Length: 164
Ligand SMILES: CC(C)(COP(=O)(O)OP(=O)(O)OC[C@H]1O[C@@H](n2cnc3c(N)ncnc32)[C@H](O)[C@@H]1OP(=O)(O)O)[C@@H](O)C(=O)NCCC(=O)NCCS
Figure 1 (cartoon, rainbow, N blue to C red):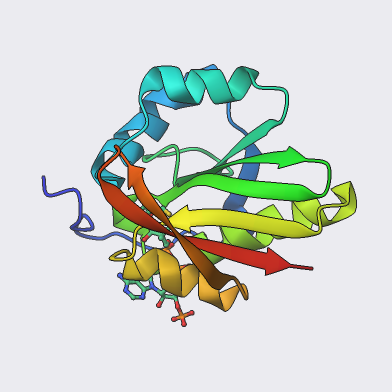
Figure 2: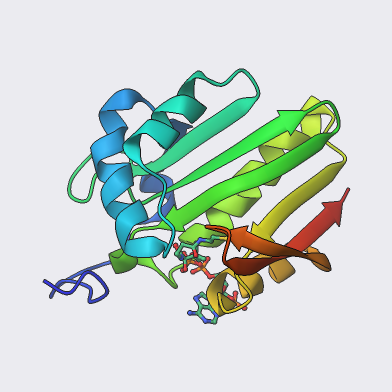
């Protein structure tokens, strides 16, 4: 099946039926299947496992509250150090895109970080990734620079920042 085509009869899951919870090892199979269809430079299983262990890292998955396929709708990973947060990875399952789940994950991220004292958020994004750039602009992220050869030592990234 084309991963970017929603299955026949697909329906948006109501917000009341969505949970965002800590990513666990048992989620990694679903997370990886989203990651490999979502990024030209996908994280490996080991990279996710490393984040789960890292003391400054936070990884969350969005799931339907009562289960059902696909188990993981989306995920977000970030690291916080003192007053700064860096968004490392965010993706929504291809069947569930453009339904507002990306915005829900970003809202969750900022609301989670605010009481921890985070004042500045950073992220890098591929200049051709219009979906992600649009999403970040909704949350008032501004482009503040360019990191040369950021992806695989070959492709540049745009650096975005948000202050709260
Ligand atoms: C980026 C991503 C997480 C957005 O998730 P999503 O659930 O589709 O986002 P939402 O439905 O909440 O949409 C957020 C906004 O982005 C817009 N958007 C979504 N996809 C878009 C696209 N392909 N082109 C332009 N705008 C797009 C939506 O219209 C919405 O804006 P609006 O409220 O003004 O209408 C998703 O496209 C994805 O997983 N991409 C692959 C992974 C990735 O690129 N991650 C970012 C790495 S830096």
